[in-house]
Amino acid sequence: MSGWPEARERSSPGRRRGRRPGPSPDPDGPDAASPGTGDEPADPEQVARQICLRALTGASKTRQQLADLLAKRGVPDDAAERVLDRFGDVGLIDDAAFARAWVSSRQTSRGLARRALKAELRAKGVDGEVADEAVALVDDQEEWDAARRLVDRRLPGLRRVDRVTAERRLLGMLARKGYGAGLAGWVIREALDREHDAAETADADVPGGQDEVGLDAWLP
Image (tube, rainbow, N blue to C red; front, side):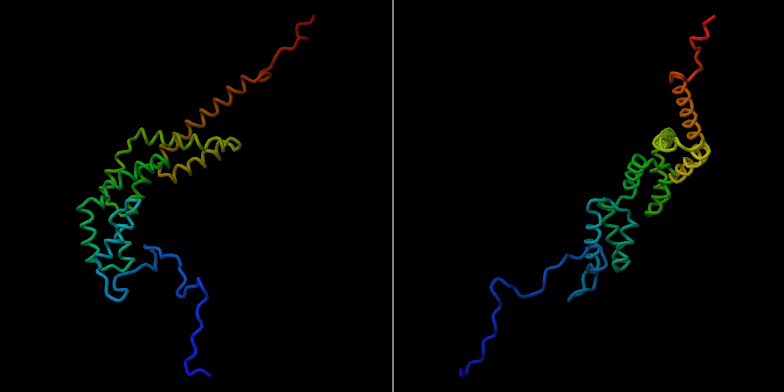
């Protein structure tokens, strides 16, 4: 019997010991690092800068959106304010530019009225005056044209219902887009009257749509 201690069993070739690799945590999620975690307390301003830069990657944000994110991540208010001020000074935060881009995109893609656009901007923390300046870029004619396009897209699906039902559904749709009852009612009546006139013209053009005189009427 040998006096040497028994050798420990070696790991099988190609096998590594240690923790299994897992997915990296979401940098803006609840498991992301916060100030004061780790071996040494993190610099709150450095953490705030990293959070803001990640949040701004690929999409602009308002100052209020970033402030809410920093508060959620536990960044002290004074550090957050200093970082947000510096980001504003260098143009990384620009609520006026954000508002203009938001209005242009949402009015074009969704056909939203100025009232709905302003409500969305205010919900994102844009100042009331800044929001007013942005929505003023949409003039009256653009709003009327957008409402007409919305109604025209919806009309084909309402041809099987009566006029009263069609009016009610179209009014509801435009109201959700932020249009007032006056403008909405006018645009809807205009579209339904045009649809009615087109249907009557089509019926008149169909052979047999009008009473025809038979050949026997000419017989003695």
